[in-house]
Image (spheres, rainbow, N blue to C red):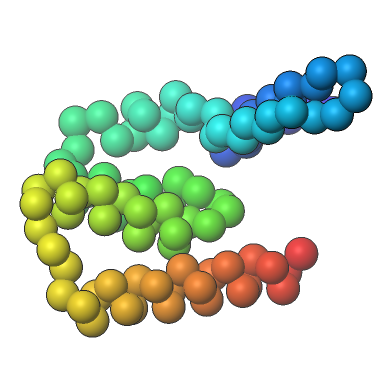
Length: 99
């Protein structure tokens, strides 16, 4: 099976001979995504990021928007935070039901 590493995750298990002691899950860095985002403004990156992820794109977009706001010391209005939470929850429900 040929698997493209872009958009995949890496799972590392630490086994002591009897049981799993530690689990690490991390996204594999997508060099293509890095190339696409290089040179973009923060807002352009926030707009592009949801399009780069086939799994949980909306959540990735919300996370990137929140990261940009935190970097700029911007607090979003409560309505925006509520809308984002609903968006991510809706996506999680949709992803769960589609599997």
